[in-house]
Length: 88
Image (cartoon, rainbow, N blue to C red):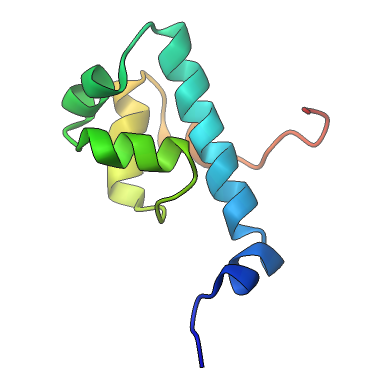
């Protein structure tokens, strides 16, 4: 039995949700004119973590996501909010 397979993640929308969070981080970082390295330093996380979450490839760790949100001048609620169904 494979636990947490790709199919399970997609069935429950986890991959789409992770990609949405990554998109928010990437867009906010762009508007703040920050490189991944700069955001990582501000958030006290690795650049690899920033890159991975921006691509939706990393599991969502609430503590580090909170640090990233704060480094972007946002709160965790903004980052984890449900996606806007009208946004494409």
